[in-house]
Image (tube, rainbow, N blue to C red):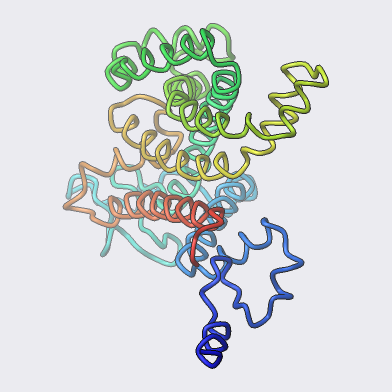
Amino acid sequence: MSVQASNLESEQLPDPTGVTAADPSKVAGQSPTRLAIGRFRRDKLSMIAFVVVVGYLLAAIAAPFLVMTGVLDPQSFNNDLIDGNSGGLPIGHLGGVSWDHPLGVEPGTGRDVLSRVWLGTTFSLSIALSATFIAIGLGTVLGIIAGFSGGWTDSIIGRAVDLTLSFPQTLMLLALSSLGVAFVASFMPGGPSDDIPNGFYVVLVLGLFGWPGIARIIRGQVLSVREREFVDAAVLLGAPRRRIYFKEILPNLWAPLLVTFTLTMPVYISAEAALAYLNVGIHPPTPTLGNVLRSSINYSSADFLFFFAPAFLIMIIVVSFNLLGDGLRDALDPKAAR
C-alpha cells in the first residue's frame, strides 16, 4: 500500500495554468495577468490572428501619411490604362496588374486598386472603432448601473434594452438615412453629401443600436462583482456611487470588456461594408472597404481581382478579430487548460 501511495503522490495532474508541477517556482511568482499572457502566447492560431490585427491597425494608421507623401495615390485617373472598346476594363491581364499597380486599376477610372483598398481600411477602421467605443461606453455604464443598483433602475434599463433590440435596425437606418444625415449635417461642417456627416451617421446608428447586448454582459458580471468584499467596504465607508462604479467595479471588468471589444469590431467592419452596399455611409470617391467592394460587384466576372481584393481583406480582418477574441477569452479564463 505504501508503494501505491507513493506512486499516486508522484503522479502529476495537468495544471490549468499550462505550467507543469515539476517547476512550481514558475507559478508561484506569476500574477494572473502573466499567466493569461502565457496561455495566450501558447495558442498559435490566436498569435497569428494577433499579428494580422496589429498589421491591419498599423497599415490603417500609415495610409493617410503614405497618401500625403505620394506613396499611395487613390484619386488619380489613369485613362491610358483603360480600354475604351471593352466597356472600360483595364488593359492587360488580371485587371491591369503591373509593378506600378500590384492589384491592378479600377475599371472605368484607372485609379490604383491597392491605394484605394489601403486607404479604405483607414476609413472603415475609423467607423468601426468609433461605433465600438460608443456601444461599449453606453453598454458598460448602463450595465454597471443596472447590475449594482437593481430594483426599479434595473427594470427600466432592462426594458430599454428590450425596446432597443426590438427595432429593425437595418430598415430604420435605410428609411431614415436622408433625414438622419441631414440632421447630423446641421451640427457638423459640410453638407448632407459630404463624408463627415455620412460617416458620423453610420457611427451613431451602429453605436446607439449596439449597446444592449454589451449592457447585458456587463450587468451579469457586475452581479458577481458587487458581492465582493472591497465593494462592501466602499459602501460601508460611504463612498459615492460614481466612485463605486468607476473605481471599484469597472477595473474588475477589463477582461470581459477586452473580449467584447475584439468581438464587436469585426461586426461593425462587416456592417460598414453591408451598409455601403446599400448606399449608406461614405460615398466615392472617398474609399472605404465597403464602397470599393460595392463598386467592384459589377465587374466581379470581367475583373475578378478588383472584386477579390477588398472582399478577401474584409474576410481576413473579420476572421482575425474573431480568432483574437476567442483566444483572449480562453486565455483570460483561469480554468482554460491551454
